[in-house]
Image (cartoon, rainbow, N blue to C red; front, side, top):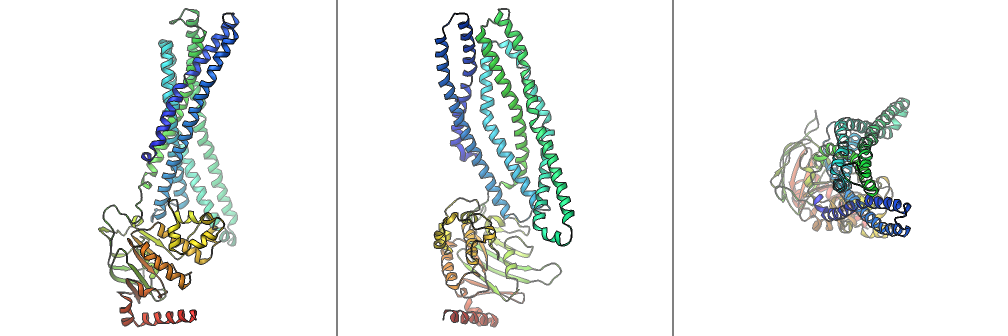
Length: 563
């Protein structure tokens, strides 16, 4: 991710160095203006000289602040890009993750997103403060040493104390933040439960008890949030006070320098410049202590989200071997305590093939498709290329796409529902599912918001948007469960014709109870009484009476509909 942001980092580095080295001009000008003022009072200088000095100071100050503006702008762009990359990767991984252990969705999402935000904030602060604190402190220190190195060493004894205190308190700070995050996760889970089961609690008279439980979660979160914020933010003034103790030494020994009794002979300008420079350095040092806390939090959060940041492979790519061949051997599935739904299934399929899967009602067609997603345990072996799938849901997310009965759309735009955060052009997939003209006719086109669950679209449009999403995120193996059930036969035929070239590098398992397109299938799996037969359409017509009667009945019905 950082490699992709080289240009932004270069701009940040250049503007940051110019701005922070230029910051030393401020104390110097302040010292000179105090000296000029003293000289004007003592009639050694004219007011016009002070005006000329101010007129020099203003453009210098403007240039320095302009560099600061540019640096912060590009730091923010850099942080936003990193945040987008991290969250997109996490989202894509979680989208396909099949097993989350015993952790509830509210807990998991709250913790992961909070950890991602903490990491990005740590990166942003580090990128900002490496210049605004590190470079400027080094510049201030060089300037102080050039004025009086002995007084600099004495006054600089105090800022490290702030660093030491921050280091010692990191366990307390991170511990309170972690407890606040856990409480937030519990509250989010309770909120989801309260919304999802509100009617059930009301019907069974448990609404009052659940409200009381929810209020206890809310009170616990408020308490822990306040405590975490106090520890995280209240230490900043303490760090600053400790760092500023050195000003007492500067007033004492610096005053002697001005009076000619110290280590170095100073005028008022030198004293003012030294004092102002140290004050700015002390303030920066207190921010450095706070930065350490932010970086420490980011390190802890990074360790937690790192397992979710493995880049997913897309468009059917794999990390070991091309998935050109799907091989299924002796596949058997049964629900606990029941007879096998089907057993001994064996077949092969190559890239570019569309395999039709059909059978009698409740024969296990959808269950058969879910096995390839890692949702259900099975017996037998499934391999794609040189990769053998495990029975624990591993690897499925990198090479298997799935479209189920329900479109599972959310209340975003058409583009958002298809892309799911992956950048690209959705026009080709809209064309493939015959939705391009309909979307173009909408007032906002692909930016049209479809409502919760796609409520603003017809059933056929919902199904086609879901199919477009599956094709947009195409994988080596795509499971399409009844994708044409909500569209008419003419549209079904057109979409199927488009599906062929679109999935030429993929293997498609198309589950359907409608058989009009099955003569065009490369292979058909017919499920009947727990037995799965693999054959061509013509062979099934000749050998399977039930398949033959079902096909001709549907064809006759289709012909009568046309008439």
